[in-house]
Image (cartoon, rainbow, N blue to C red; front, side, top):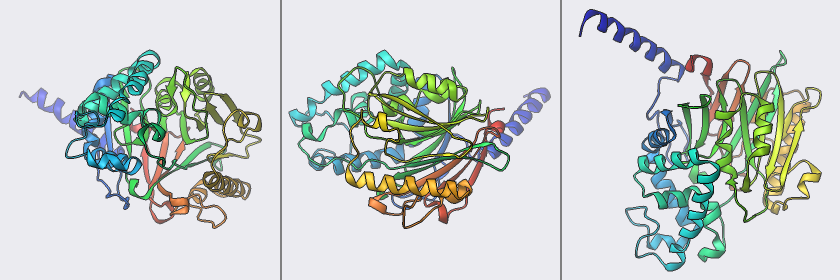
Amino acid sequence: MSLNEQNTAQRVHRREFARLLALGSASFGLLGRAAFGAPARMLQFETSGNAFARGQQQGKACRELFHPWVKRFLQNKYPWMSVYLGGKLELFGASWPPAMRSLTDAVRQWKRHMQEFFPEGLEECRGVADGLGLDEISYLTVQCYDLALKPAKAGVAETAPRRRCTVVGRRDAQGRPLVGKTDDVSQWELGMNVLEITKPDRGYRHAHFHFAGTLWTVAGMNERGLAMGMNGIPAPEDNIKGMYSLDALHTILPSCANVDEAIKHIRALPLSAGGFSLLLGDANGKLSVVERTSAGMAVLPEKKGEGLAHANEIVDSKFARKNPAANDAMKTNSSRRYESALRDLKAGKDLDKILNNRSPQGAICQRGENDMHTDFAVIFSPIEKTLKYWLGYTEAMDPKTLDLGTIFT
């Protein structure tokens, strides 16, 4: 290597070192993993390139998390699967019962809809499957499990518990918007969320939290400062063409620069099943909540800088009448968290304290309430382009901070 080449390599190495520091001393690869039920460190990695390449990179990074999780998930939801799930995760082998193999029709329908409405997402799924070392049809069945694996069709009455999350938005002392979210899962799923830094060949670069080995983006912020945090809401089970809500969320950060663009984008999404509320904030200083299902959409703007909150019930009364009601346990848990967040906002509490709230009247940080546990919490600052996040039970952990302005320079 010539002296000029050595100097160039050294400069590249220094730039890479600075970027790694901004990422918290890790890039593509494993920062650390938590055993089920004991969150400690979050898997954080970087993906780049086209959709298939990014998916493949994610699959390789998440393999050790995904395989144990999905086997336990499927066996929890469908106990009879334990007879068939051995060392491999191949859902449609010759030994599987005809009723299970017939579900390929539902999976293929989801695949056709993805090809029509979100072909880039389907390519990313194919890449994830390849990186995980799974056959495509088995992986796609897991990716669209809530559409294809219906308990009534599979012979089991009990479904997996819905994830219950809380989003809260307010302004700091300088009037800048902040977007906060907790993500709540079953205890055995603790540690399954990952933080991905994405540099796509097309679209905005972004950092996003999602379940390992999936496209299910639940929170994130892009290089333009658009930040989002979601939670699930009741929605009709329509048999119409379109996208599943968790897949649709994955389209927002690469495509939209601000809240107004995001609202327009979300309204135009061909949503077929599932529902979400989405707290949005941007570098222009705007905060808003969107409620979206296949029945339509409602927008809840911030009022006089008072902040916004949402749990898992539809707030807009007119829109709520177009959708099914939540079950009693979910409704009670959601109502308590929502009212607790509103009380904290009215009291002027900092967003950190709101996300750490352990009030008996409605804990935002869940530690077993209705069998739910907070896996992570995050606060996005769209104007500063920073995010601060906690792993596990937020009131017991010190936060970590990422500077996206540095990462995406």
